[in-house]
Image (cartoon, rainbow, N blue to C red; front, side, top):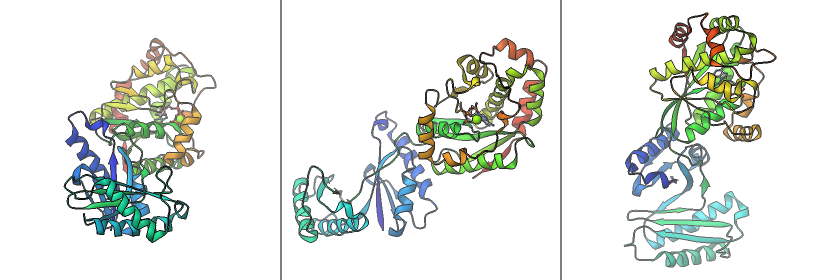
Length: 388
Ligand code: ATP
Ligand code: MG
């Protein structure tokens, strides 16, 4: 069996909520590996340890590299907490690591930590003893400054961990510890990234998308479901509500001047989002809005849109440049899908010159022509729910 030692950020544990955070962290790790055959998660010595069969190494590590709150992982093996066993294990781990990545085989260093202070050999002496054995067995030179291979050893009372790799994990906070939010997910590049950033700070999200059939086709909806599938691999969100927007959208367009259309649609979207927040115990709405990116995303327009919401509106991408967002979208794995051409409902009936400073007074004149509260209630009540 492979033992993967998972390290989490210590900073967030200082608040006296240690148990709560650690439980959330371990639950999320369990969720990430639960469908791997024979995977076991435990929390010995305040660590999170994942055991999986050796052949699942890459799959398990790839999943854990997407768990927010973890800062690094070390796949390795366990040995009896006894110097001969540790040494033999270290030699075989070093050999296996170099077989996997020959470029590491130029030099090495041993970094032992004696967590159990009763262990008779001190850390420095473990380094020397194991180092000598690895040097003899593999013919590698020691380099304490820039080693090719770093062999880590952690000695505890009932076991010792030996590993030859430290992989970075995404950091952030465990999903769920900061509360719950509702993500307005379009098929675009921005909103999946916004959701990812919110989840990285510990928000558990559900997603809501607006769809206007027949103007937006099945493929536009499938695109959002595909995005959700990628996001679910990061535990960002796995439930999507699809709101049917066609009729209301047409009535809104007819109610006001063309240049207000986008602001009117957006106000309806956040109105519906607020209703769903109440039903799903979410306390914030998350959007991919970005300052100045398009005409609807000016300060006056965002302020006018926000006044239709009864919940906090979070805009993680507010200050991002497009290039920064695109780089993140590629890293997350949503970029390709987001770049598919199918239109979403906000591109529909969009005027050539949308207003850049819609006032509340203007939009309220238009909204007075329909019963916006009733329309929002109906849309919220008739959402289709998709779980991936
Ligand atoms: P995105 O790439 O996320 O679509 P964008 O830069 O294209 O963003 P807009 O299309 O103006 O910007 O949308 C701003 C935000 O409004 C989106 O990031 C998203 O949160 C929300 N939104 C837009 N269209 C929809 C939709 N059809 N369903 C749900 N939310 C939407
Ligand atoms: Mg868009």
